[in-house]
Amino acid sequence: MPSDGYNWFLILVAIIASVVLVLINVYILVHFQHPEDRNQAWFPKLVVILGLTLSEMSILLLPLDVANRSACAESIVLSACNFALPMETLWYACYMAMFVMMVAVVPFTLFYYEQDHDMSAWGKTVSSGWWIGGTVAVLALILGLCYGFLGYVDFPVTTLTSGIAPLGGAALDAAHKCVAPETFAANGVNNGYACDADGGVPVETWSVRTTFPVYVIAVGSILSWVLFICFGGVGVSAIPIDLVKSFLGRPRKVIARSEYIRIAGKIAEQTKAVMADAREVQREERGTGKTRKTRRALAEINKRLVQLEEDELILRKMYPQGEDRDASWTVTVMGYYASLGGGVVCGIVSILWMLHIGLYMFPDPPLTPFLNRFFVDLDAAFGLLGTGSFALFCFYLIMCVIKGNVKVGFRLLLWTVYPMRLGNTLMSAFLFNVNLIMLSSIAVIQFCAKAFDGYAAETSVSDIFGQEIENLRGLGAVFRENVFLYIFFGVACLSAIVLGSDEVKASRQPRRNLESL
Image (cartoon, rainbow, N blue to C red; front, side, top):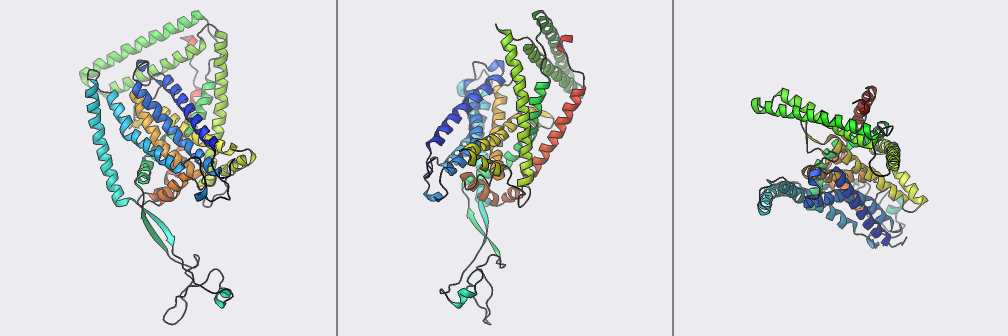
């Protein structure tokens, strides 16, 4: 590895990671999209893939920042290091791109997609443009006013002064920590040691104007933490629990073709009955309006439809399609065992995250470096092994956010807005939830930068989140006192208890058997 810091390997890794993330996001889009959106709505799909890729790449910029800094030898000062990647510029470019996507591109695409199909393309464009223009103008006005009045960083500083004494002089010989400045009161007595920070020198505040991008990132972090607490706090427990649950609820055998046709017919009959009940409730609503009775009936119908969709998925797995059914069934079984292994690994990672928060982030000073030391030891053992593990731990959190978003969705009171469902997600729901995931990624980066500030020291992102945002006027105290971190830890523990107890209760219920339909 070159000692001057320039490393072509980092550039190659960044390019390969970008391509892999795009392919993963295309896979997610294909498997979640609604059948009505197949082979159409190409521009919304492009925006969804770009939004997901940006949110994931922003997380991976953190380990890339660490690797970029580590490529420079410790004997070379940062200002003289020839870095391969301009990380500070990349951070600001990534954040500004995400904000443009969240404020303008995604909302415009969402409005355009949901316009009346009879409207012309020009009419949709103008109408969506007016909505976005108004929204951007209001946000710009609010951010501009807040930045104008509160866009300062208040650094606590201690002003120290030192006296001058010749070598071998009596003043230098008598100095214990520093040379006292020549400041005397009227009676000729020295007023104190203003060159010694431990000598009771008062702390002053040094205020400087922060940059507008940093202020926008700080404001976005507040909203981002709210989403990260809700989605990430649930996802950190939901990922391992759902993976293990998928293995435990797997189909145990292959059924015959005649049995497949019989069960499929029963599911079709039940589906027709549910649709008939839904039409009946709709007729009642037209006559009496929405009442508690009709809302309860619709909720029950929705529950039955979800169950039928699950029955259909299980039936497909019990009767593999294709020419080689044995090979297909083998792959299905291997997938379930991989799910079990993934659940165990994710459970270990979630536990390590909770332990790291409790042992390193909450105490002051920390009880142990914990994962920071683990990554350093891995780097000492083999090259970028520690950086790779660090990347996996950070990337796991954005996966928790995505899982929590799919699990609970964005709720207004008791209603889920734009839910994500496998094979049944419209582009409007995709766009809305991609915006939430992009916004959540800001808090994930800030969380990782603070959690691993020992391993990721002297990086560009640590300057953004560690120095400026934590001392920002009006907002810095929330981040310095770890308010969001305590709430996240509580939500994560509570979700583990709730999800775990729900699964225990469900396991005690008689298992639904498709063959008994």
